[in-house]
Amino acid sequence: MLRQPLTLDAVRRRFAACFSTAGAEPVVAFAPGRVNLIGDHIDYCGGRVLPMPIQYGTWVAAAANGTGEIRARSDNAETTIHLTEDRQTPFPAGHWGRFVAGADAVLGNHGAPCRGMNLLIAGDIPASGLSSSASLSVALLLAMGALSGSRLQGLNLALAAQQIEHRHVGVACGLMDQAAVVLGQPDAALRFDCATQEGQAIALGHEQCAIIVADSGVARSLAASAYNTRLDELARIGSALDLAPATLARTLQTPPELDDPVLTRRARHIATEQSRVDAACAALQRGDWCDFGRMLHASHASLRDDYAVSCAEVDLLVEIFARQPGCYGARMTGAGFGGAVVAAVSSDQADTCARAAAEAYAGPGGRTLQTFVARSRGGARLHD
Ligand code: GLA
Image (cartoon, protein in one colour):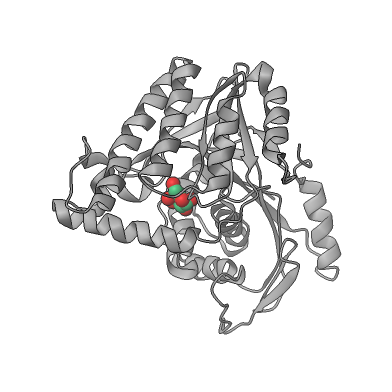
């Protein structure tokens, strides 16, 4: 099991240690990561999805520094960056500084330009696939925005965070992650309709069912390029069917047959995943964990076979969970190509299930499996 999440006091102490001359008490923002329970790779084509925030996330502490310069320290990257007053600081692709520069630019575009400030960034999200980027984007917007007079909140905050990814990080992601991070409620999942951009909290009966997250330990090295390939394929499905790609999840009621067998499989995932999300939401609402679990299993098979975004280790981990007593269902979660697996497990068997899965996954190769029981403590918040 994992370390304890970071605390507000610990973040304040770190800020004081990093910026000892700053004097002013910082504002501190926290934005959670998220685990997607079901509905992957349909948010960017207008689908309905079911993510939930987790108890781990990103903290950003911020205080004015009386200059025009933004100085940011990342505890995870163990580096500090400076955005000079003229903001002419380019960061290479993949550099975390792009999120800071992006938040600064997006706040400026929303009528809240940033002056000089010191920022401390510290995150405790324990695996990949749990949306550390949406968590970082939202925490930066909240903390930097608190000093620059931003009024961004709710859906507008989520959309602004998505702009950071689209315009400054270079990932044309959907809105699922940002919506979960901002709009998520305690002890509930968020049914989010990416077309109407409306969310609805669906309570999770934690007394009966635990949501276990397990880290396959496989870094998601291919995820960004494969994500863009899937977006290209979606555009080709759209033109083959004469439909707007951004509406495919709601327009494809039944899987279409296309000339290209690969596109037929991709379209089948989109159509069937949408009906699984709807069935899973209905199962959750009536407390039918077996049916909910069946949807998770079927979703994994579809992501593995039709959408082709899983990998051997994640498939193995899902199979291991599937054979544990008390496990209702398991699947990969997020963009795929490694990262985390989510499993719905009878609460009274959660500990034994996690231990047995870790033992089985270790196998002769001695792989280690980190797991935790995910709980939502709600969406992003500001402490000032
Ligand atoms: C990433 C993206 C999301 C979504 C998932 C896959 O997390 O940021 O928008 O597309 O992949 O469901």
